[in-house]
Image (cartoon, rainbow, N blue to C red; front, top):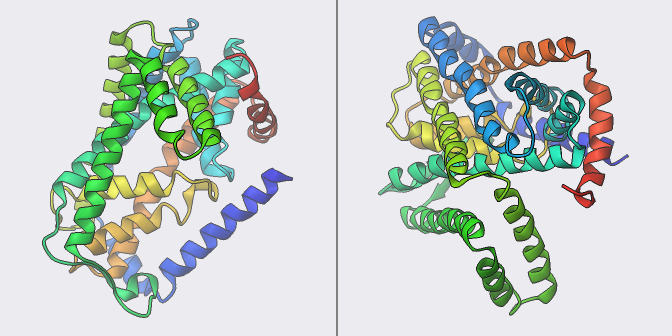
Length: 358
């Protein structure tokens, strides 16, 4: 029942976002902008997109191999089937399905597979933090940041002053630095971090302090899966490479639409996009994917036509669908697996796994 409720909420969210963003759209201008796309740049965008698939698996390799010898192909299969699930099923069930497929293909206990997937998401954060760090430091407006009323159909323009943006940027820098420092300290000195956490949070609530301490313990256990600091560094390095490849992809796509942009625009765009799609929603992140792209363009490219920005968001979303679907369907067929059966089983097992031995 919970799965259907989550799915319903996801579809409602997607419908709301699409309605807010695309109401009043001049579809003639949107299609005209799409027809004017440079095919060469569109093809070029697929190069970093396709390279990201193996680099993402290589990042995971340094985590998985610390517990069991697993082939690159099996990890590739699990990851691509998980991606396919995220693009076809509601609620971001792809991570649970990735763990389940790894279990089916390798015999690793599901709780351990689930932990390995979770740790991969932790190392994935380092690449995202780097992208967001560049965005925060590079984009420092001296004038008000204006989101035109037409963007979301608001009664008036949405305006952020330069001072408000600066305060938000400083907070974000401190927040990101704190996350990185916490991960490093957890790996080097777990007891110190736990004492510090309990001492500070315990002043407010002992119950919250206990909860946070338990979460930090889980992260620390996961980080110590690495066989060596070298393996951790390599995994983080491939996280940086994977996230870094999103930048030339977005550059190619903006060039395909003949958009003139500042060099930091793709960093801001990718940061907003990552935040938007982090929450469970409709299949394929419909709506969640489009809003941050349009928002970035109207903020950083003030003279851009709104319909042109919407055309860019639509095409950028569609560009990523064919390889995800092709690879996901291929590995499902190759391994004789069914997506909906995996979804049902993975959802049940993911709720049981945290209590199992990892």
